[in-house]
Length: 213
Image (cartoon, rainbow, N blue to C red; front, side, top):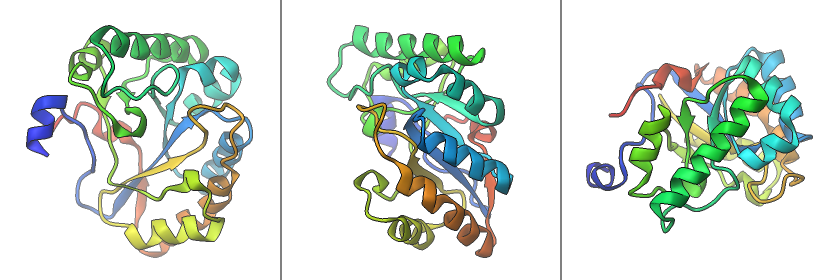
């Protein structure tokens, strides 16, 4: 990973090795799934981080504002562009347009960034630094976007839990603002119950901002 960091810049992919995990949701906001996920997180008193697509934020600004009121928000580009072959200008444009949309909708400047599909660019380091971002990856994902079923999403998370894990889930579809992510929303109560049953607590990636190791 050190060689990749030298080329693409640093990315935080795991927290401290203690009994704490970090729930993260990409590709929203989504009118149905984000709302249901927010309700579960509120009931369970569990923090999370939402990496939001700028174009979706402009469609659902009130929902983005509700998310930001209780959870850390992050930039996930303007329209879910894969950055690995993008020019320096396009990388910067994607981050800055989404940044403006998120700040406009929520009144907050995002401080975290995650690249769509994890495809980072050699130009990302300077663009992220310019905006004051910490770049995040993830420890594991469970391919919930394939909609394998509520029980299967829950099982995949349960079997991969480990101390400090940053868990990649999705509350939206990066390309379709109306995309169906309700399986993930319905799996979330069980995911939280399983993790707590195994002795884990939940943390916010706000704890790891500024961590470029």
